[in-house]
Length: 333
Image (tube, rainbow, N blue to C red; front, side, top):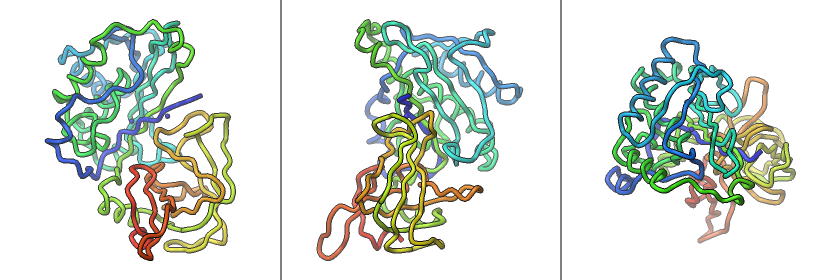
């Protein structure tokens, strides 16, 4: 389920290549956000009885673990809240949910506000059951209380492409570890605290060559070329919404001209975790989707970007920017 906003994406789909046994040995890792104590109140903004019940079940699941206690409040101005949207464009393309950490902080740098979202449009489109939608809600609450994604392929509610797993012992242990020590009182932490958004996409293409083959299938356009222009849309030093222009050398899929402009994940108000900003002069292969308004975008943020690194035995090698695996050009189209 990334101003400096981190985007935690809760994606469901192609599971990674790490075995469940290997992936779940250690507690689910922590992100850099936490409440001062292992409890927080949130306002449930959902107007749908169906989705209100999903958030309620997710809350009760976490509370039963005794790792963290969520409570509800009737205060509509609460800085922590749950809600739903129905969107499938821009940053919401194929996003099942999002968690927005650090909407507010206390003077010591402890989080006092976090937003948790479910995307009705994508959940309905891909026929998630109510139990599976609840798993996504538990996942987003996990991000909000201080957990990162678990390993690819892990049996964990915090699996980056989770659809079927409920809250597991590794997640409970991870949450307990976050709150095992008193909250920091560092003024340096307070001054450095910035919000972070995590977007959880439906599809995770990190399953090595199988994932790349699926990317090739899902992309409407695939081109190779040189970045000629990179325009950030706000003042962040990295990982923010950026428009890239590429001078095309090879066209592998889709109809394009000599140049093409595309966006990476994010918006003018939020950044995307793990999104790599490209620079003029870099040679890349990009796998793109296209919005109804004609705007091209890199599929699933960094998962649609491959950066030229070097030539080996006559093969040009490209690094997948989301997981740093190398592929030959021939494997990318």
